[in-house]
Length: 197
Image (tube, rainbow, N blue to C red; front, side, top):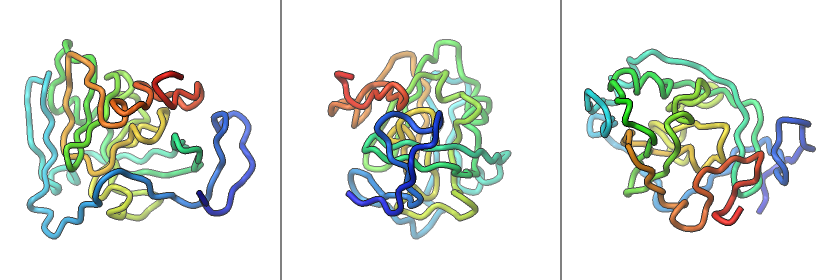
């Protein structure tokens, strides 16, 4: 697999057995959704919350916006450094919904029934957000337009593309890749790639 120009590892920033790329590889399972009318799109926030809600694209774009710079690491072996994302912090969605103390996990729901799971502490980290812009450009459809999660401290499959729902849950619910052999947590610095790691 070719990832374009590869740079040597940067000490302390790149997990073991990762190669740094200057490109932005496109990897996903299933179809790429293309939206003709954003009026048909919505984001549902539900589960262990006081105020379930469904937000339109316009409402998401009118929420407080944040920018965050980070490195990302794909389970397939590439890392891309110095990404600048713009979007809505994960904690903003939690605050608006009024997350209950019973919520221990977050399940991100994407197009075609795709899901991924993570502990609520990871979702609520300062660096976690739902992004619409990468390095000053609106996300392409292939990279998750209109909204993708960015959970940079975990392998990038946890950063679901095409997010349509945020579920706060009492119980863990492994998602698509987790049910198909990937690690349930996915810490790149511990090389938690597969369920047996």
